[in-house]
Image (cartoon, rainbow, N blue to C red; front, side):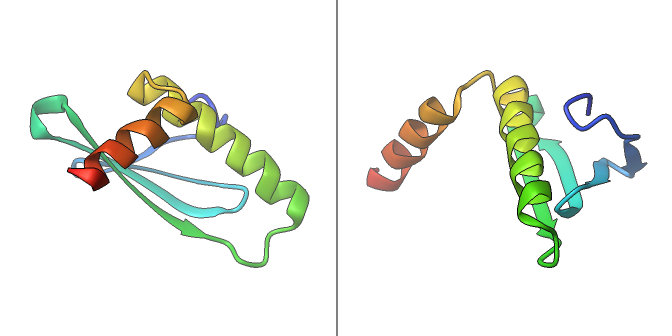
Length: 83
C-alpha cells in the first residue's frame, strides 16, 4: 500500500496495515476481483494533524484501487442507496 509507505501484512486473503490514525486497515478482494471490502479501526486518540494526513492518504488509496475519485464514489453510493 504505497500511499501509506508501510509494510503490508497478509493474513489469509486479507491485506492489513497500521498507519497514523488507522489502528487497522483491512482489505479483502471478493466478487471475482470486482469487489473491494475495506474495514478500518480508528485510533481515537490521534492528533488532528495525524488524522488529516491519514485521511488524505486513505482517500488517495481509494482513488487508486477503485479507479474513481471521491466525488465519483459518493455519486455511485447515492445511486445504490436510491435503488
